[in-house]
Image 1 (cartoon, helix red, strand yellow):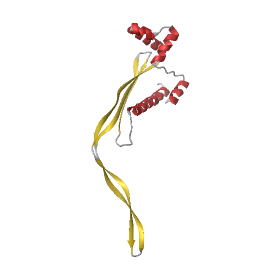
Image 2 (tube, rainbow, N blue to C red; image 1 turned 45 degrees about the vertical axis):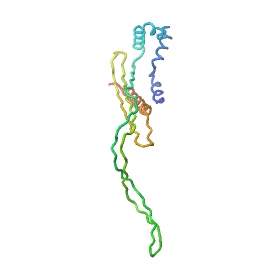
Image 3 (spheres, rainbow, N blue to C red; image 1 turned 180 degrees about the vertical axis):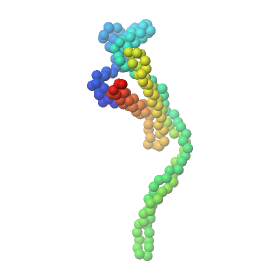
Image 4 (tube, rainbow, N blue to C red; image 1 turned 180 degrees about the horizontal axis):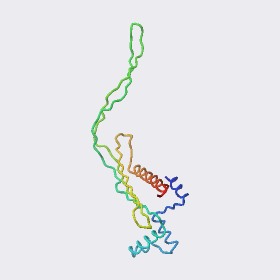
Length: 177
């Protein structure tokens, strides 16, 4: 993911997070927005929004809508697996080993299994018009059906972020018509 940001920065795209913007306001205008927020939140919010609108082209608002582990019931089912049977055989002509190939049915019992959930909404605002220009909602769930599955919401969140960054890069690379 950091390589994608590096590629975009080489194309003169700049990325800031909220606390960086507060530091930028302090450097440019010698205003401590955090102190103003303690006494007059509406004024601090107006200063912040004005600075962002004047100095940024695109703002991405990220909202985590779900980040949880729950459970889901799954029905039991049969699974057909290949099998190899080896037998020792004695005949009047001697003894030997016979290998036969086939299939066996194995029942996988049902029940409640843990499921990781993660849902994130990304809304991109163009600051010139102050309108939302692109929204993406990525909603994922992964059931941990075996003892080897160990997916956590954090794993899903990382995949969602990576997917968003790739889609954003595609949109920024695409020539405008």
